Amino acid sequence: RFFAIDGTNYGYEFPLRDEELANARSYLSTLPGQNTIVFNRYGSPHGKLFSKDMSCKLITEINLLYPDARIIMLCPPEHRAPTLEIKRELGYSNVYAATHIETIRDSAAIIRESDSVVTTDTSIVHIACAYEKPQVCVYRDRDELALWRPFSDKAVSLLPVPPSRDVNDVDMNAFRQALAKTRSLYAAGG
Image (cartoon, rainbow, N blue to C red; front, side):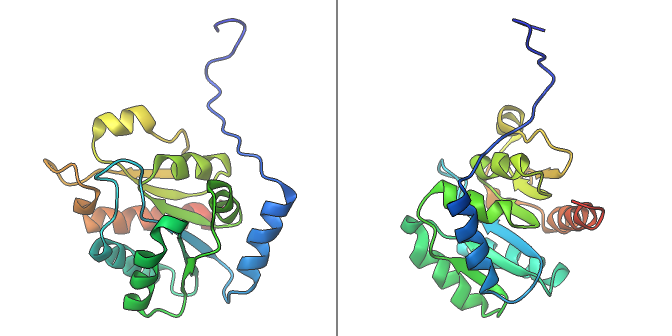
């Protein structure tokens, strides 16, 4: 305890306005399917971007494990064109690009209404933690993981195959296992 603060509470909060939640719910209500998996390919620093090829591989794996789910690709304004290109290339009827997103709060509202998350961005990791969502998060290296790790037993963290520091070098078998774990966490009640 420091200044009468209990240092063991690692809880997160990310409050949203009713209007933001209503917009997310309205968007999701237009899409078929019940379960929602959020996929975010963008991270802040260089080296934290899932390539087009890796995004297609990861979304294909998600689709194999969750064939009836809707997969929502977060799509901030500056990344709309490549996200839409990935959607077109995949051709899956259950994959959507959330082109209405303008702010991180719009993304947070979609995450709040989702069932699980796959991301390489730490802000999205911690938003998912705030809403206690099962998630797969990919970090560049152990130092980054130690600094920005999620404080959630519902998060599965992955690293690239050494010696790489590129998130595109994540082991696909490890990714499949992480997805299966998030599925069991969701099935067990989130």
